[in-house]
Amino acid sequence: MSMSRRSVLIVGVVSAATAILPPFICAEASAANLAARPVQSKVSIWVNDQQHDLDLDTRTTLLDVLREHLHLTGTKKGCDHGQCGACTVIANGQRINACLTLAVMHQGSKITTIEGLGTPDNLHPMQAAFIKHDGYQCGYCTPGQICSAVAVLGEIRQGIPSHVSPSLSDAPQLNAQELRERMSGNLCRCGAYSNIIEAINEVAGAKA
Image (cartoon, rainbow, N blue to C red; front, side, top):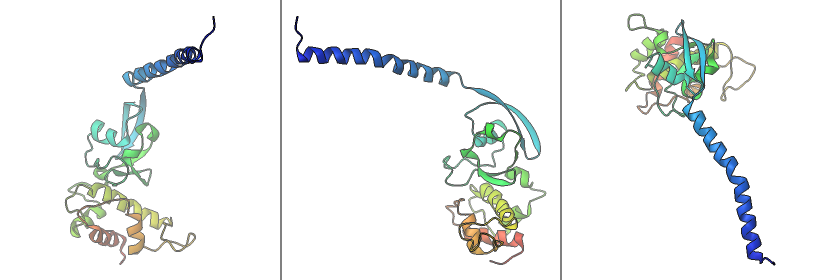
């Protein structure tokens, strides 16, 4: 019995669909199973000179660990995309966006949050300078700003250049241009930028 071209095409399409569908169905079921059963991992992390041993979903960000597990709410969740800098903390001496890094990546790391820099009775010099120069305004972005400012002074003192440093080999100068570039990842809708520069300069003992 002869088959028309139309019949051959229909048979081919049905056969192809039968062969292709099962892998997609399996992949969807597998993804659903992964979502239902998150992978847990034990993480030991130092935060503000205290060790914390945690059992975490491997997808948990450092920011969520600080806020939801350790209840250190000074570190703010702003954009949650690494663009505003409100979640800035210091990890092993380097500033990072806590929303962009997973907690499991910081096994054994030493994390410093705004709570670890100082207390109301014993302020860090940068905290005191922000208050003196009105560098906080509404205050939401301030914890990230202060942590970043502390790290910025460390970068300059270590001789780490920025995009506006005139030389990659000479020590960067502590001036307004350098500070603005280095602090550009911390956004403030209140516009306290000039006050923040004054606060950093006071702590550094320099004039912009």
